[in-house]
Length: 85
Length: 218
Image 1: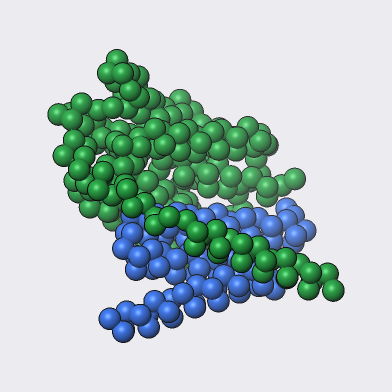
Image 2: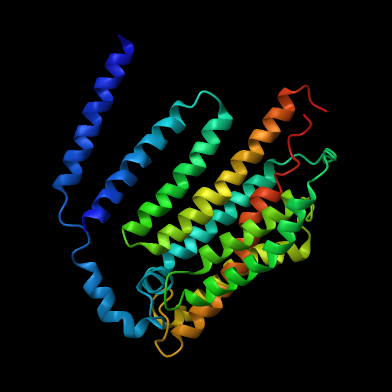
């Protein structure tokens, strides 16, 4: 029971910390990576709240697909900034 | 000075939100017993799937419509001119990994679709895994980006929504939208979920693959 409580507190703290770091990240690259980390932690949090359906959706859509889209956008932006084709 | 004012305002707003949250009645106290009581009529044994596709099927129908409209909007703003994909070499390790992972992801997707009836899973999760497989294959340059959708792709993308809509219309005679007859509910839900899995997978992958080469030239 106490181990669960410690884990939950740790998870909640890490969630808030990663959310803050995502918003305060100095570069877009770091923000995107931290956003993916935040999504995976969020999925863990949903699993701890015994909502496995939402955890699955969050991991697959929130962290996976959104992260891939953001990374792709980042690559496009970088290519455009680098003088273009 | 301004930062301080914004901070104070944000703190006040957070306080009001917390107050409003604490003032709410105990969450959902009335609904779970109702769902449990009606599980026998739902055609599935997992409460989340029962709510999503039977009791509140209307919400899911509109959700899919919203996703479809999002993709249509993306196709509408897309420029027709296409830049040539940058011919950067892809690491063979990535390609091999994608080749190995893609079949597994298809299996996981079908499993999630089937598992949705009795345990966590369902069309959205299955579709997300399938779409992720397509994105992975694209990133490993095994799957080219999609240009304007041809007939089969259009059918695939809209098919799930149309099946859902057809079931809704066919059942309209019963008096209420999406009120399945309990004897056939399981089969109808499986049919709708299978259609939705294919369509949502193409939709979610499309969000990535239609955009993929866009913007490399302006």
